[in-house]
Image (cartoon, rainbow, N blue to C red; front, top):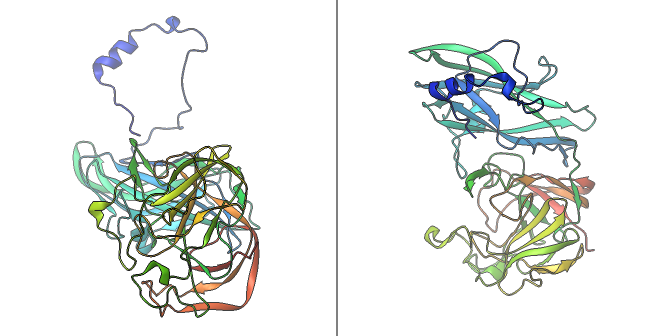
Length: 406
């Protein structure tokens, strides 16, 4: 959010008020840096209350957030490198974004903007750096991180001559809040994590949406679950029939006790194999038939794309962990039957902050070939000789999961 810049008249009016007119305790202030510094590109964290470390199946704590970079000058500024450091010990470096890593992670704001040469920021323009920090499980996590920017920008407000800058800005505290521990939303083997955390290739991680007057990454930790059959195929037979898909009509289970706050149950399945006509999709039907439950403590669970007529709960119902609340379908903005699941901090499924969580018990069976880009019947998979049991971990992109039968 930009701060207003007060003009000379307002400044003069404020300076005319005698200090004695303010009662003790009315003053509002903040600590200033030791010396002022000209910072042509400003930086802030999109959701400063959100960075919550979550332990994933790679035995690393992942911290994901978005750094908003704004060019405050009249001339183009060019980002060369962003280094993420310990805010209290700046010599301790956690990640460096330069070269290809910078080009991949730096995007214009908007829905799933493609990577490219976005390091040049036009006057008054914005770029988003999508950050994923990974700390080994046995590492002591920092209390807060900061961001050292190396860039080229105008020498001053009156000149367009580009000169190098290097400065550290935007400290953000890592929250000590522990992620929710949830039951799996599905049962059985061969569930594939698609569009999952924490890479930038999927549709969720970089989907920053303008909703209700704000910018939100509700799907920061969202997962699309699709199922493989015993042959390692997502479907057999007609690619355009929902019933051909291994996961279609599977039971969807509540991940925790909660109260139903929203449902939709009236939309027909889309024809698989392609996304629906964009002109038919809006903010109200994009997620298809769905359920939102209030888990308490400011956490909400979201289950999307369920089959028409299968939603077994209604608003106000109290559900128990493990209870069947609907069946997997292909409704809304989807190209193949799957369950979209995420946790958020409000009832708005898109106008909210996506929050991390862990699943209490499951196993990793392997992972699919990341080079395969389409959902097709000859999808190659890589099943491990022996599944790896997991407890209280967050599953990562492309992994094949066994949720058990109970």
